[in-house]
Length: 504
Image (cartoon, rainbow, N blue to C red; front, side, top):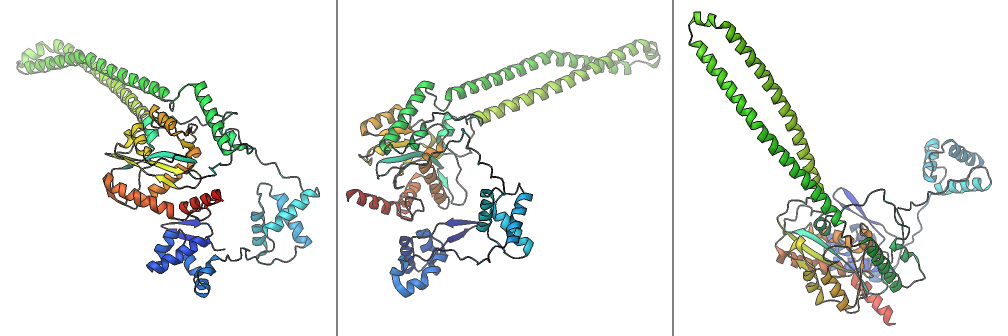
């Protein structure tokens, strides 16, 4: 068995053991192009695989690539465990109750002896035997899975063209091929989704439990899931991503903003007479000072008492004005803080997206069983794409034998137009539970792969992007996949294999 790793910038990407079809593709492309790196990239393996299998290929040809090497790991022989070492293992286990794990214990003993004296497997055997004999207390039971995190094994369609996963993603109108694409969700930004509360417990009758019943067929499981989701929506009302609650919160914040502006306007109107009175008083004081300078010295002495009283009133007026200015500064600071808080709330409620002049929308249609990408229609309307545009793009190349379509609760998928399309084509629309995007994980993972591929390409307009999507569609369906079901086969190969089995 050969394990392939390839370096990408500062991280190392792990690949599963290669298959015979991958190795055959690798050597065929290497002979055709003469470029090992390019051949390894198209075969989805590391460059080391080529040099690892080259000697066998040169000696035996393509037949040698079909033979798997021994998968037995190379182990270092460890002498028989002595009684002293057994007691040392148990003593260390008792003295360190917080440090559980057989590998750490074996590593501690290696450090103490300066060499490897026992393996973690033998450590586990000693501890389990001591528990069975009553020498050690039983291990604590594993913590139960919280009710808020239910898990059910994923169920995939057994036949091609039986179920598809569908989702929408957006990319900018132009891209230079150097910067990362923004991770923006079209439906979340357009509908204003509220995230679920962290402490909300999962219901005991959640619809995903139907897939745990292995006695039901795939069609029965899907129909049961749709029935439970439909019943739940009917009992709770049509909550389109809690849009009404979101709109009510926006209206409340907008009302607070309007009240704050009205309060500010009242303050300014009330301050105008005060400022006018202060300006008139200050002008009168300046005129009085100018008139006093024009008086003779004897006249000033005669009016000294009157002038001192007038100056005392002026100082009192100045102190009152100073207190008034300080009060205004405090009011202005409170007003600015309230305005900043309202701006923060509005930014959170309206989910401000990155500053991009225009978007393009891509509809992803993936076969649930074979991972084969069926269509990648492009929409120039971007985040404003409608259900009518989706239906018009899907109508021509729609598989007539399709039974189920899995999608999220985006506005385009829950529209009446899409419901009529489902009725006309005769398939069942399976809408996932809100905030459970993992139910549509096949489409979500494909979008990540698509964006990673598009990040290295440049385009300027929808025409160039459409050409890139056509190139990616061929590349994705022909490249080997590492999924558990595909086991190194490409989606096209796996589809042909499934069709051959069904016809046998």
